[in-house]
Image (cartoon, rainbow, N blue to C red; front, side, top):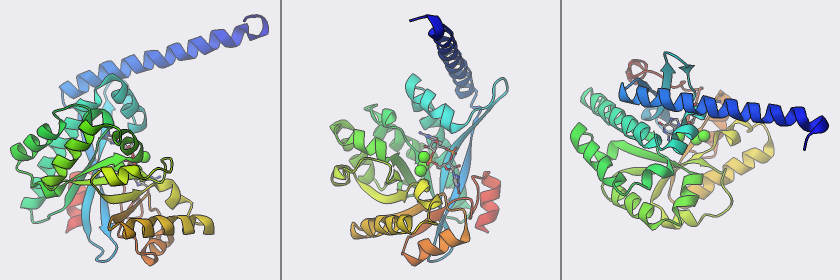
Length: 274
Ligand code: C2E
Ligand code: CA
Ligand code: CA
Ligand code: CA
């Protein structure tokens, strides 16, 4: 396993070494950032295609570390999931989202706030309880909170009764579950029978490729599937007027994406609400 390949073996181990190193640095800085509450939240609006109003916002984590710079969610979330720090990020985001929903409500805007949850957070037996406690502590009504779970999460959760129980308990209190990244899973819809999902969010890859007739038919099929199950349908990653018009014409309920607004600060969202 040497000779000509010798070099590539050395460089392979070098690069995996670098990846490990990066991960442990990110983990260390993340622990500190969580401790000092140095993460922050941006909100991206969702617009009701019937009324044109913003009715909900999605909370997205942002982290700009003073030593290692900005770490994107696409790098941060997998590391946090592996190390278990996702539970800390989750409670931080939940707390922030609830506080913000109350601020907007008190300013006369009853908009829902959606947070993203990882399956690992729901493996904690106290997840439902601690969500309800946070609602109580912040004074946030349960019906202003939405929880987004990915289709991948749903596929894992359908085999775990502990997770299903907690989701049902939260739904009973008025919390709404959103199925995120819809269309990226593998065929099975069994989770639809088992999990209390009320909203389907079509993955942005399908929206970005709407120029093709085939993809228009696919997205139309997804919207009709959602409607036939009495679900609300959201399209994410909407970037152009044409995409919005197509989605309106097939009866999609809500859109989210750069065409409406990028993820924004609370001040920017508040001014959009006026
Ligand atoms: P996601 O939940 O599917 O969120 C949508 C992502 O698409 C966001 O990326 C958003 O900034 C981006 N986006 C929104 N509109 C457009 C558009 O019109 N065009 C394009 N090209 N992109 C758009 P972001 O903020 O980088 O987050 C990436 C992923 O990281 C999220 O995907 C979500 O899975 C995860 N994530 C972010 N925040 C959290 C969090 O607090 N907790 C957990 N568990 N995951 C999070
Ligand atoms: Ca999401
Ligand atoms: Ca998504
Ligand atoms: Ca995604």
